[in-house]
Image (cartoon, rainbow, N blue to C red):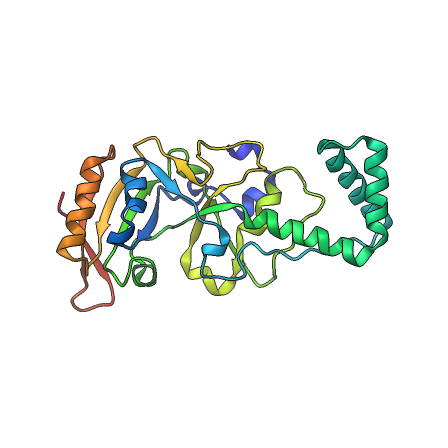
Amino acid sequence: MTESLLPKKFSESHPFPDKCGISSLFRFYKIDLDRVEHLEYLFIKRKLYHSLPSQFNDPFECKPHFNWPEDVNEIENLRQHLIKVAVEHGCDEKEAEEIVSKEMEDSENFQKIIFDTIHRIFAEVRICCFTSRKENLLFWSHYADAHKGFCVEFDATKGPISSAFKVQYVKEYPKVIYPPSNDASDLKPLLVKSEIWNYEEEFRSLLVSWAKIQPPNDGESLILNGDEIKNVYLGAQISKEHKVVILDLIKQGGFNPGIWATKLGKSTFSLEFERVG
């Protein structure tokens, strides 16, 4: 997706990495030898897995608020939108008008139906999260198994990674626009989190079934070209066994990243990186 296709206000709130002066994005991984196929997906099959919101550790993820319109014109716009949706699903226009009008008579129940539908749609979106700094100690602890895992540096100047959106951290709970705008603004509830998460400096790649423009994917993973991985950083506490596994997977795959060892700072709470391959 190019910036020219994005509404100005949206692109200002959720810019691509290049607009932030960022050339690399990072993801942290743990190593589970019982589920090593997840790592094979990345390094050998070149597939970048995108999780469902239900797999995240924040229960507020992708559950936007919805305000039922009170203005007469807004309600009529909603009614016309629902009629259009019914027609697209096989109803003739007269039948669609009758169904929608009848359903809207029970306002409370109908609002619940709309609200549940919105939540279901957002729950089916797939998301891959990145951060802009490999030095983040909390990420190494939380997502790389207490420094026993590894970190992958992705090239954020090339597609599809270059199309990751910056997350916005706010006080206000996200609100969904319905009827939808049919542009990137509809993605905003997927890219807003509480201020308490701002240390993550997060960017997100999205797989949205209802988006007009789709990056190459298989429904749950982004298909990579083979030149997106720049470097792999092995955790300071990685075991010899896990190190062998990761290096072997990289060797089998089509990527050719630099390999770096990570060491704990001797006199500061920091990390040092040394290239070893």
